[in-house]
Length: 105
Image (cartoon, rainbow, N blue to C red; front, side, top):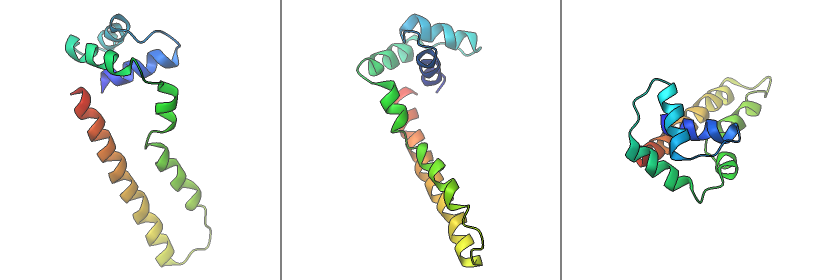
């Protein structure tokens, strides 16, 4: 995950996402750099529009649950359903993150 975070940080700062920059960010964080993973990440991101990928990420689903909680005077059954729904969405988000982490080790 540290490689993905490094790439996101570089993108946010409008720096080039290349092997040298990703390696520098990971080293600066105190983590050990695996050059093969850095190369794989940079190659995988070569044709990706990072802005679009971030906008369409499944993490945005969790933010949609917040307005539902503002319902006001809901019955106890309604409140129980609202509490269960974010847990299910959390599992979906967790599964998505596991899939992403399997790509990069």
